[in-house]
Image (cartoon, rainbow, N blue to C red; front, side, top):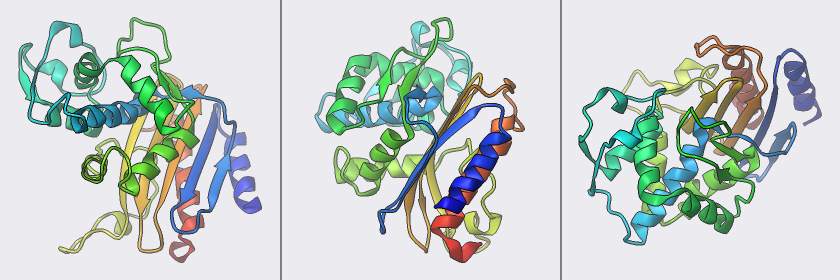
Length: 275
């Protein structure tokens, strides 16, 4: 761990912002932690708690996966996603809205779900689940000052552990959430520096490494949280950053170059056979 701390310190010294990482190996229980533990801006990683709360409402019978939800004018917001380009009044089943909210981080899909479940329900459930530093502050509306939400990498890993062990909401709900997370299309941090041959298979066999994740970005902030499954052991990891001086929404944003190295170092520590 001392060597890993030195590596992270070197990365931090050459980064214009600050970052925090927390990871836990599911088999050995080993924890990797670096950086401050204070709650940080979640950006779109708050969509993981939103997903969990929606699934809880579905489990309790308040909502249904096939229930149709209309796209309303009040849901409108720019940023990530595709629904802003569709016609108002479009009806989508909740399952599809949740899928869009996660895999393309659709902001309008997020507001559609928030309209159904409310902010208070999310915050109450996070307290009940033990993610006590996690709170959502507002709907996705860039006219309202930030933060969207606050959390810590430790809280995010705690939630991901529940999904991995099929203990969050219900076994079936946890399995569905894991499947959605594996379809994530913003692979900017946890996967960017991973060896291509481990993440992709040229045969009918599944890839050796599968990552289910949710990323998030606003100005100065880049986050990524997820579960990594490997033949050498599985783990959850959350990386959160703030105050990065590179404000570009671009694939070569400084954080998108620096933080993938943090993720790779955690992977190589937990899976030394790949180094």
